[in-house]
Image 1: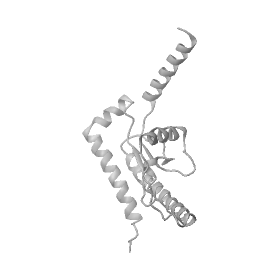
Image 2 (image 1 turned 90 degrees about the vertical axis):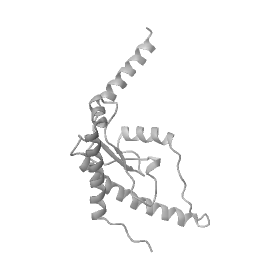
Image 3 (image 1 turned 60 degrees about the vertical axis):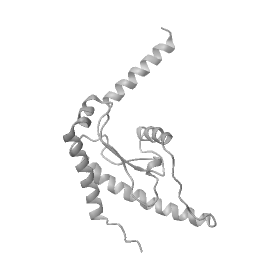
Image 4 (image 1 turned 120 degrees about the vertical axis):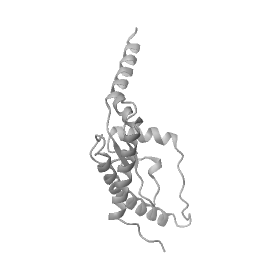
Length: 165
């Protein structure tokens, strides 16, 4: 084996080892300032390559106004997403260890709806054999679903949506 093959083999072994060692649940919200961790950045880049981004139809006659309204809306959306994400994360944490104790942020294309709180929930890592067992368990699936629903319910009980005229 030459040096390149040894390095490649070592990297594959490291990656496989890393994939088995990762564990825990995570919740992500949109970030307009970059990812909160290298893992969040990598995950967002990988997922965004697979998604198409929907457009927002804003009037092109007033681009500065449209940009300002979009910025205000997105700032509020991120704030609300972090709040609902924390509620969901706390609920999931009662059934599975958390990968991080706070809501992570990254620029996921699927989280860019400017008018509704959006979160991405990672219940567990299927690449980890112990967590794969949890993901396959109907009881664990039910626990995850209930804790997510309860977190969303707690958020809306504390922050009901404004009525639209």
